[in-house]
Image (cartoon, one colour):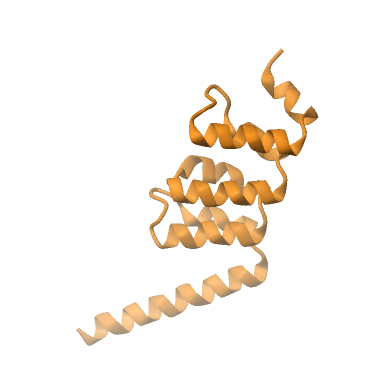
Length: 122
């Protein structure tokens, strides 16, 4: 039997403990990504904060489908600020609401026109 087969039958408290042990390096041989479908939203959001802090690009990429739009936005903005190396912030877009996508579009257009004005002045 593989450990993955037991995950659906474990309670969230124990799964969160396992996730924290993986994050701290105490527990090896278990992929954090395998826990995502079984962790509660609050636990996943805590993990996102830790993963951003640790700059875990690949795992952040994997967690996006399991978290709220608000937390995806946190990842997006962290990536835009350069806090997550080699993270393509556009991968967050499909998981954001249409209003937020419009807002990001407007920000990008505004920034592009501001940059255009700056280069024209030089």
